[in-house]
Image (cartoon, rainbow, N blue to C red; front, top):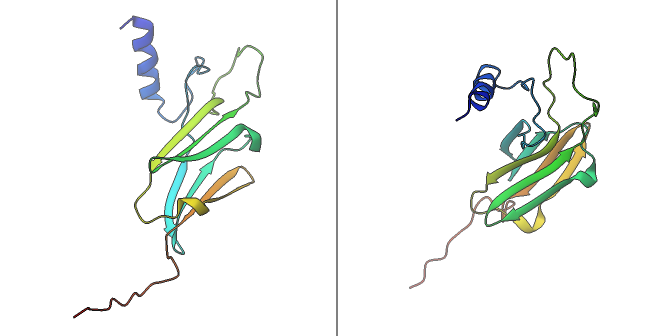
Length: 136
């Protein structure tokens, strides 16, 4: 591995969570995301302020929820004399393995104030008790 690449990797490790002071234009970033369960559904909330609706895509493929998109760089001029860069730009992607028993045909998404919320309901979420008949 060339020295420059090792040095960049070292910087990434030291500043984990912060954007290093070199270009990430070629890399895909991972937005911070919360995944939780409530009201008979799995909820996925992602912080992606500044992303336009038309620049994001939500799909389900082979029991994987895939959220990807693009955030335009607000500083298109050469990055000179910056002291700290923590905001990620460019392509992003997150992939989540979905548990069984979800109704992927009725997924709903809402994007407000920089937060994307995806709701994946459980199948038969209204039926909490099911009586099983025993055949003789």
